Amino acid sequence: MGSRTTCRGLVAVCAALAALVLAPVGVAAAPSAVVPDVVVTEGGLRLALVSCALRNTGTGWSVISDAGHQPSGCEAVVTYADHLELQHDVGAVKVSSLSVTVDETYAKSGLRVGASVGFDHSNIYLHSGAAGSAPLNPATVSASSGNLWVQGWLILPAA
Image (cartoon, rainbow, N blue to C red; front, side, top):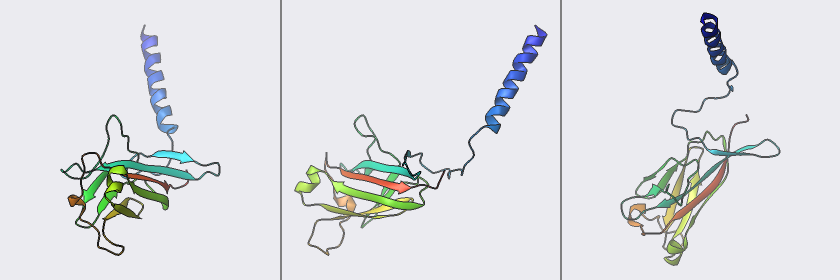
């Protein structure tokens, strides 16, 4: 019985050491980093999906995550007087693309949106006036079912 206990203990120690030695080696993400959905192209380019629906029903803008909506790579949205800041710290080193569109609710009201995209966040500007008009205060834009749709690809470091 004693040799079986010793053997089991030795197997457990070997398994723990193997897990440490065989663990993948890579660049550790910052503690605040989001684990994104990643696509690897045939050429080896690693792309992080950044996508979500944003909504303000009158209590402030938020990333929707519920039974019908699943964000990818998006952490939070912060409201400023002239833009929304979408936080997406996925560890990107380059931007491939990112676009923001309005849904049918906001399209009917003439809302237009545009984004300035960075590696860890994007600033989203909302407009409804004539071309060249100042951005709207996002806190003043709300609808019970209106969404802003975000979809983009950010380039990750090589594996």
